[in-house]
Image (cartoon, rainbow, N blue to C red; front, top):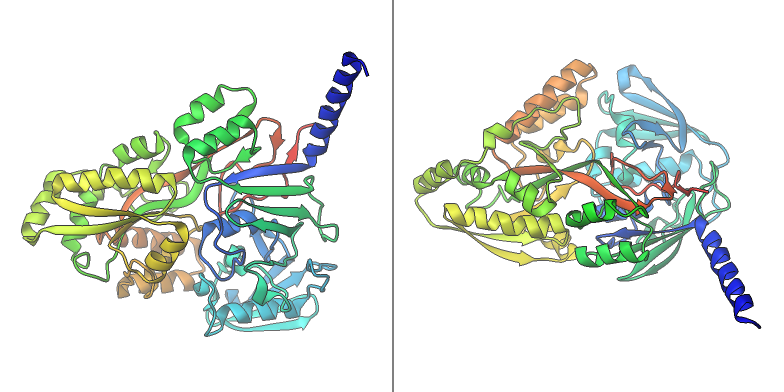
Length: 488
């Protein structure tokens, strides 16, 4: 075979390989999910793999944050929102071949609200009084009180529909109704999904999706530049974005998330049960330095637990502005030396931001002992057991200010007046009334300095310039691949 012929064969082979790859995608992720069961764990990385891809709910979030039909094609409110009737899609089946019917909805919602439920967002289901299958394609949900927000709650990843036969094995062998089915999980490396031929809705353009776990920012940058990943929707190395943006092979995608990034404080334990200390910490922090140093300028300062792009957002940053002299005065009033533990999970915003925060606290007289913890350890020790003083974390669930009303939540607030506000929001059906209550809620937790509110986490992603359909914004924690394709 001549060298020219050999070259032609190699070139044709490369072209064929490239063409074959256009129905597959490899995405980078910072964190590996601890499990693939979105109904039993709070880790955002779970939904980043399975939401809308493998599992579906009665409703879903669209890329603009709107609540859209999913397994229910429509729904009706009765009795001013106390009763909700969901009309299900016909011809839906699970990946194991079982038909999806109203009985599966009854099973899923009853399981989520049961006394022994391990659902991380059990509060979404606490208002349910009963769930009935009126017929195979109609479900009637009766609530204890009117709730105009119920379809929104059903769009969360924690409310996806399950097959009773596989509900107990979702952690490692998930079965859903989505356009992709579970293929393989190589622990510590990747998860692979493949398109499912039996999908009830519009088939995805992709046939295969691989999620690779790369937590180190330098390694993430190297993987992008080498083409080892096709996209990194939540890119952990913002310092390299200008370099990537200058390369015509790539596209930089900057949008918003629902992620309120906070220095969480353990309100339930001394010494942080002292409001003066929490206030001293809040005023010792220079948000701009953290945004510049940890996020290289990406991020919007926040003064409460609410997304700045939400219409009910109140800018309360001035209530906890940088005032180290005030911090020193408050510490002098307390009169005792303060030394706190600071647990930092793997994301770069936490590790980098935590180092800056420790230096800022040290400057006013608060010593911190930093411990870097892996994600599973953070979930068990900090989130699960509340065994911490301080931690840096981004809460990426949508409109989740209600977590401050939960008595067993890890930062231990649940002030009765705040709980009453959340109860009032739950009952309110008038949009104006709900807006006013949300503003009051923001103001209350800001005044109490429950946590030190840092910045709204931006969505800084990078992708091969030929990829279309990736979400620019993140109204929920998801890498929705249902509309993703390669340019022809």
